[in-house]
Amino acid sequence: MGEFKGVEITRHTLHYRAPITTAHGQLHQRPVVVVAVSDDQGNIGFGEAAPLTGFTAENINESEAAIRQWFADEQPEGPPNLPTARAAIDGAFLDLQARQRGLALHRHLNPESPDRLPLAALLAGRSTEDLVCQALERKAEGFTTLKIKVAAASFSFDFERVAAVRSATGKDMALRLDANGGWSTTEALHNIEKLAPLGIEFIEEPTAGLEALATVCREAIVPVAVDESAGCLSDLRRAIDLGAGDFFVVKPSSLGGLVVAGEAVTLATTAGQKVIITSLLESSYGIRLAAHFAAAHGLTNPAPGLATAELLTHDPGSPLTISDGHLLLT
Image (cartoon, rainbow, N blue to C red):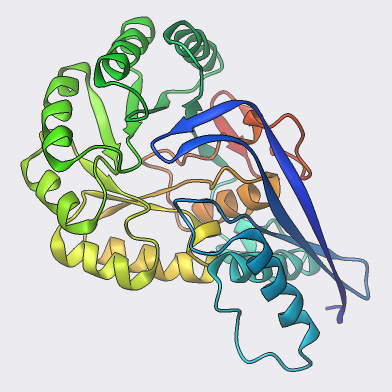
């Protein structure tokens, strides 16, 4: 094993091919920080800090400062307090350890893990026609799960888009929705009832807050997934206690990296809940870490939401290959 040699910390701006519209607003571009740690044998491990409004409390300046301070300390006491900074550092060192062993990261974490993952594709079209066109393209590419953002416009517009995609792709395509907390409890229950006949796999964050989600989860006829309302382990424990969801979305990049994400998965699965691993719309550095984590933990059903590198006009990392709706882990 080589010895730690140094670190390179760089900032990049991600630009999206089309605006990603959510209940939190439109996402056109955003900064991220890439951490590259190296050893004296030429091995390099990569991590990424990708704070995102609505999902993380810290901003990019705070995250980058925390990363730089951690590496500047001769003997840092534990990981940084900021989750995205910790995610970048933990990811970089785990990646480095795998490369030192000559292994893919998922095999370093779990020697029995699969080397390909089924994926859910996020549709990001501006109009109903755009969305249907994308849906048909993804179906032709072998995807069997699609995700649509809702609650950023009128419900009639949302219903039109979801119904059009369902009609175009057929009953065998799994459709999941994400409201990003954009509906009130009453609206969520009403809207879910209207959407249910379209065959919805589950809906993420139909309303905001764990108590409100628990109410919706008890009464809704479509399964509910908790995402940004459980942004840390203590929130996740409380969500489980309240019965706030049937599924739990785990984003390693926002939660604090692969170590913390592993604790979250254990909490959820021990409580009998299903876990979906998704990206934070970051670059392929972060997506790659999340994908290898999902494989190592056997989190392939429901399909991970990791087909997001293709939404970028330029990716500072190297995108993993997608074939027949699956991500190939190399």
